[in-house]
Image (cartoon, rainbow over all chains, first blue to last red):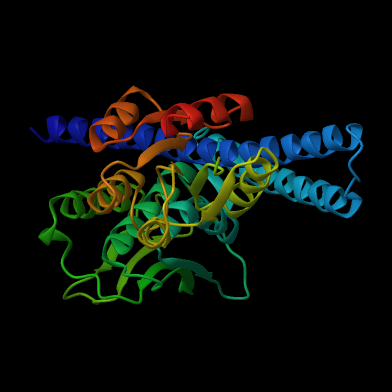
Length: 233
Length: 121
């Protein structure tokens, strides 16, 4: 029986990991499309202006210069998104790897910006001065942070802050997702209850433990603790 | 003849302002706003021939915007202009009352044809 449960858990983790990877890749590719749409319209406008100049109308060179600057800015924006997708995609390469925690949280916060914007919440990060290397599952770790963010986002109202951060505690780290709005009990909403159950399983699989999960534990925080190396207590 | 009046509702500000400029060049009286709530306010105060509407925006999504716009202006022609125009979204959009759905990036000539078709002139 326990073997069956373990196998079912492994399958769930694998399926959810794949869903997470697919959903975030699709979401970020949509962001790239937005960038390309803007470049498309700006290039089209430049074409319109040049056509008008060919017809004898004066060319607004200041506007042309402004458009080239804006196109360059959009290319930078697109490049940042593509870099994030690339690093995110590679996070599934190895089941266990050493990574910089701050860089990872910044990446997941970048990926989470769009859902935060759509929900009109304000997402920010908060780090100690000291950086930290962890050895764990990069994909699983990001999924744990993102799942906690999703639970917080479900409770967030307009222009309220969600903060993702960490603190060094003993020989490990405590990750915190703080919501300005009280999180309530995830069990009240089926989808959030599912996410909370999954988060417990995921954190446990990564060798960590949940310290608080909103509601009675700490109304504004989801906190989980991890050792610096997966497999160590 | 009065120029066509078009409202663009999309949260990508640079896209909206550039598209407004391109439609203006072509003799269309275009305006843009960045979210559904602002779009609803605009259509209450002004008469537009066509609305170009993004599907995913902060706050109210495009489908909800269509329903609410049609509560105020049942005959308003709304074209979904989005990166999410798959079969499911197109169907949902049409069920909600959208005139049609175009996938961005869209060529300006294709867009103009559809705007004129939707406006009936």
